[in-house]
Image (cartoon, rainbow, N blue to C red; front, side):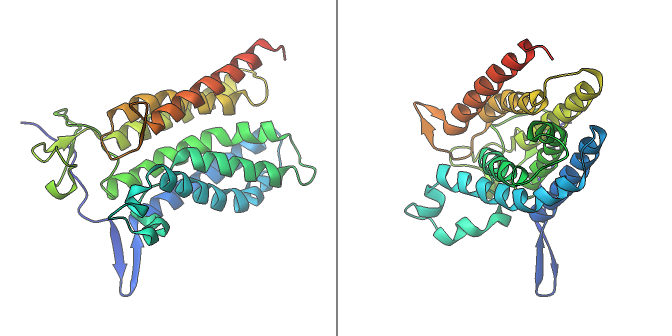
Length: 266
């Protein structure tokens, strides 16, 4: 007898007039974990851990905005198409965050704030300290997609396949009942990456910035395979999903600069 991962039956908790979306709670949990882990890692290399909290005050909202913008710009039909609803672009609790936009804008704002005044360590050391916490946050955050019943892969009969209600099945897949839980694959991949980054940081002496580049390269490598499995609606470029191109580009760029750093003597 097959056992499958069931779809959630609730996506929000209601307290009278107040509705708390589980997606938002999970994202918040990921943010808290990223800050706590980042503070600890930064202090371990001699940094003032309060700098993590100070910069997070600016970087986290920027990351959320960047992530949402990336999602809306790469999936415009859902918001600005024939049957789209433009105001839904602001409904972050319904899901839809592009990690590339979050990392890009969040990192840019963090750099700007960090370099405004003298800090206890360099920005590259700051970025290295954040790498494991970011991976943990991403691993936690993917469970928000589970509660929103989104971002799943193609049909699967594996024991851990996700059982999908018929009203959530994409067009052309109505006769399939179970699908690849790509949110679970990405969550496990990110948590594995966090463990590897923490292990390497304690065992191997690297050039500053190498851990953050390794984080980007590792995530992009896993995302290539995960993105290939997904069947949700997405824009394509030359026959491939845009996120596949972005993942491949990120992997190449991060790997190139990581290789350069590994060749440079400490």
